[in-house]
Length: 314
Image 1: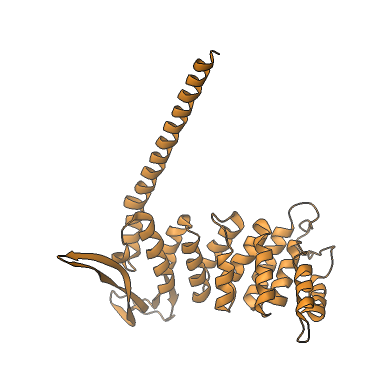
Image 2: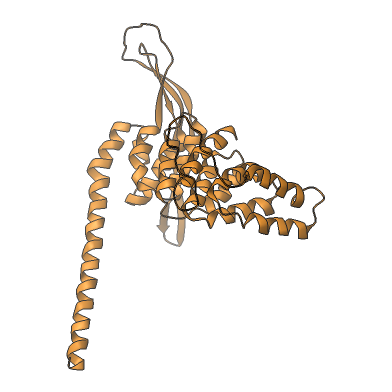
């Protein structure tokens, strides 16, 4: 939860620095930002003690939830998450529903939870409340999280990119499905060999319909995920494969293009070639088709208006 608190503090301070009633950025670099409003940590601590303790009745809990949902200041979202992320489901769900109603600041807080919360159920419930298309605060958060050195954080961000259908992140997914780390700092001459260690995980990537006389069935298509690392001998560079990011990349690109991209594996060069020569022209053709359809609709509407005017004699 430490990473959640530190990162979300910066995010919500940035959110809180815009709009009426919110604090302005500091005029000098070393000066801390101080909110003129209440100390939300103390306010929410009292709310928890008074309404969500072990002896609280259901009526008391409902009253506390109503109070919680009346808090709309973006600077309260961080201490709210910190205070109630381990509460019972009625309080947690009320908090998530409340954040979902708070426009872009609430969406940013939900996205952070969906990426950083250690509780899988909390991540899932936060994800379910995110809206498409995501706003710029969520997109910025996804960008920084995909680049994060922690594999779990980057994987959760990739999952969110897939769920929210952020196709703009495809190049970043391509680049971050493999990360390099230095494992040998001695001056060893460069070599050309590659030492690999890992395992292959099989899964059902899809099904293929099979037809015959009196037979209708589906044949499974078995896919493979490579998990592990590779070391370039003599260079000291270890290339770490990130299967969660890779699978998100395969899912979003296969869905976009209408055919499986799984055969590219972790070949970054092949992925970039596909993105430039296949995906971008495909999307441009889609855009032109949409423009043509919109042009046809506008022309049809103009003709209909013209006929209506002629029919009315005007």
